[in-house]
Image (cartoon, rainbow, N blue to C red):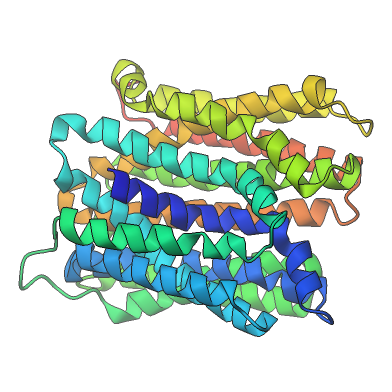
Amino acid sequence: MAVLGAVAFMAQLDFFVVNVALDGIGRSFPGTGVASVSWVLSAYAIVFAAALVPAGRIADHWGRRKMLLSGVALFTLTSAVAAAAPALGVLVGARALQAVGAAMIVPTSLGLLYPSFPRRQHTLVVGLWAGVGAIAASAGPPVGGLLVTLDWRWIFLINVPVGIATLVAGARLLPEVRQPKGAAVPDAGSALALLLAVSLLVLATVQGPGWGWTDLRTMTLFAAAALAVAATVERTLRAEAPVIEKQLFAGRPFTAATVALFLFSAGFAIVLLSTALFMQEVWHFSPLRAGVCIAPAPLASIAFAMNAGPIQNRFGRTSPAVTGTLAMALAAGYWLAAVHTAPGYWSGMFPGLILVGLAGGLAWAPLFAAAGTLAPERATTGSAVLNMSRQIGSAVGVAVLVALTPRATAAGFDHAWAVQAVAGVAAAAALLVLRPRHTA
């Protein structure tokens, strides 16, 4: 549990921790503009989202333990390269390869939980794993703010000892799990189509606010992504062993979790970036102060994530997830009413952050636990699909925030929080509409 939780935390933290470091990175490479520096974040987001499902499918065929340890080795090595990067191009390239390693780690770590523990403990361990992801997301700004006060390179350097330790422990402790010999090799055509679909969609979403949504480049990317999505669906329906098997969506719990994760993640990405940016740009807090002020959210998440198993056993999967998604919407409503241009952290931002912690602690675990409703041989691929939905949703949330706050005004953040509220309510509605009949 410690090994699988640590690698999942490390891989997911690096998606969020860089947000507060972009200014420092830009100052280290004179002559680079904001658009160029933003690729340190965008390269990771695009590659991570695109590689998740192919990596998960290959892990089931090749061996989950082997894929996980290879991903940790790649992630650790590229973290060291990123920390020592002499030029922005090297840093962006290292981030792209780091994302490949993360995509090999995240779904495979969840796929290894099921065979590593007896069935009666699955709810507990998946709740802990998902809670680790929620804490990683919420802890990104505080951890980044603290490390940036030393040097932004520490954001990547700190991964190296953690990676080495988990490699040694994982090689000794983790079981090997793979499909039986003779199982069909994943269809290359569907894997390529999915890679193109996700990468083009996320690229268009990331670049849209800067290029303009009606710009020819943006519209071309969206059109190409639509064609790739159509090709992916076609291969899913017709190929012998598609990278996304249609059987994954035969059950309502997995379908509901996939849709809800996209919506919830879009709103949660707005939460994470908007709070840090608002306190820095509107209230003029330092990155460290803003990071420390966001800390109550991950602390609240820990309290609920540690009890995810008992909560799910008592109330089922749907009720806690619905409560969590609505808590995120309630946090947005509170900020719309209570946060103003004059600094007022304790009466304005703080109560909403507690609600955000409640949201993360309650929602992530049951949503990711939907992978446990699948056949054991599909658990890693199912986890990869859920994580892909989360990453695409996060990219959409970031794009919406950037589009609504071009000048970091209070009015722009109000519009972003309104979108956050809608995303939370929509996620709750998806869970209720698609919930299994006669269950909580």
